[in-house]
Length: 106
Image (tube, rainbow, N blue to C red; front, side):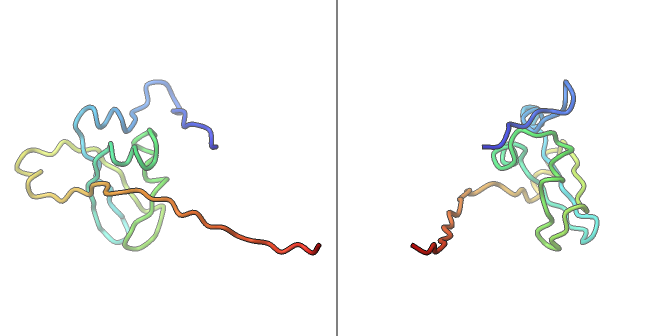
């Protein structure tokens, strides 16, 4: 089992802190200019309780597939802005178990 994530410095701003403050995370691709809004608690379930700045290191753009073109921004949308925005919510997480067999001579 991998080691649990430890913040790089004391007092780091984690996804749980962002959720507690009621923020949304806007992740934008600089290459294909697509911006998506996420709930920090959903990202915490998938990625663990990591720093907000490290979210882009663990994700890829779903449109172009590039990894190092993402920008993360924590936003406090107003009520009028929040009504018009689309928020991506976590529906389900499933794991695929693959079995690989190898033949050994007797």
